[in-house]
Amino acid sequence: MTSKTKIFGTSVPNLPWENRPEGCKAPMWRYSGNPVIPRNLLEDSNSIFNSAVVPFGEGFAGVFRCDDKNRRMALHAGFSKDGFNWDIEPGIIRFEGADPEVGEWVYGYDPRVTILEDKYFVTWCNGYHGPTIGMAWTTDFKTFHQLENAFLPYNRNGVLFPEKIGGRYAMLSRPSDTGHTSFGDIFYSESPDLEFWGRHRHVMAPAAFELSAWQCMKIGAGPVPIKTSEGWLLLFHGVLRSCNGYVYSFGSALLDLEQPWKVLARSGQYLISPQTLYECAGDVPNVAFPCAALCDAETGRIAVYYGCADTVTGLCFGYVDDIVEFTKRTNILK
Ligand code: BMA
Image (tube, rainbow, N blue to C red; front, side, top):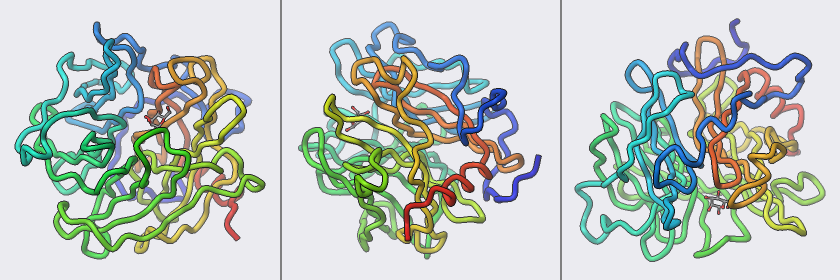
C-alpha cells in the first residue's frame, strides 16, 4: 500500500505491527498483546513507561524510563530485534563528559530519542534544581555523551526535531513548575550548536474546555515530529482536570514545515485516551503518554509507544493517511 501523504524518512519494514482489527474505524488501534513492556521486566523495576525507541542496526534500541523499587526515576538502555520483546539493561545510563555542575545525576524521566545527522540524541526531563531538559548523544546506546541542559528550570517534554530547520537545530518544550504543573503551552526554540537555545516561539496553548476538553489544562509534545508532505505530524498529550484527578490523552497536529511554530491543523478529538484496564489502573490512573513513534516511509505505517498509567508501556498503530485525515477532519483551528 502506498500512502497519499508522503513520509520523508527511511523504510522500516520490520517495525512492530498488527493490522487494524475488523470493525475498527478509529485512526489508531492498540496492540492486542498490550502492555508490550510489563512493569517488572527488570528485577528491581517498579514500573517501565514513557519510553523512547528508534530503529537501530537490524532491530531497535531505546531509552527507557524505569522507576525502581525505591521509586527513583532513572533511564536505562534497551534493545530489541522485533520491537515487541525488549532486553533492558539492569544498570542505569551513566551520562559522560558533561560539566560536573550539570553532570551530577539527580533524576531523569520521560526520554525522547531523535536521529539527527549521524547520532542518536536523547532529551529527557533532567533534575537540576528542579526539572529541566537534559541532552546527550550516543551512537551505540552504550556510551552516552552528555551536553548542557537546553533550558533553565523548570521545563519538561523537550523534543528535538530530526533535522535543522532554517539552518538551526530546533526543539519543542513545555515550560512548567516544580510540581504537578497545572498549566502548560508548547514552545519552539532554535540553536546554532545544540548548546545555546533562543528565538523562542509560541506553538500551542491548551484548548478551550468548550472546544476540546481532553486538552484543556495543559499540553506537551510527544514523539519526535514526523516530517510529511502535509507538514510536521506532531502527536501531543493533553490533560483534562476531572473531579477524580488528571486525565492524559493524546491527539495530533500538523505544523508548518519551515516555521513549525505555525500550526496548520489540530485534532479536536483524541487519538487514544485511557480506556483499557492498563491505562486506567496503575501508579497514576488514567494516563496515555506517548514518547516515541516508529514510521515506515514506504507504507505509511506508524507504531507509537506510550506510557500507560505511569506503570507499563503500550503500543498502538495507525496509518499516516488516516491520522492526517483525522487531524484535518476534527481540526479545531479557525
Ligand atoms: C507528568 C509527567 C509524566 C507522567 C504524567 C502523569 O507531569 O510526570 O511523567 O506520566 O505527569 O503522572
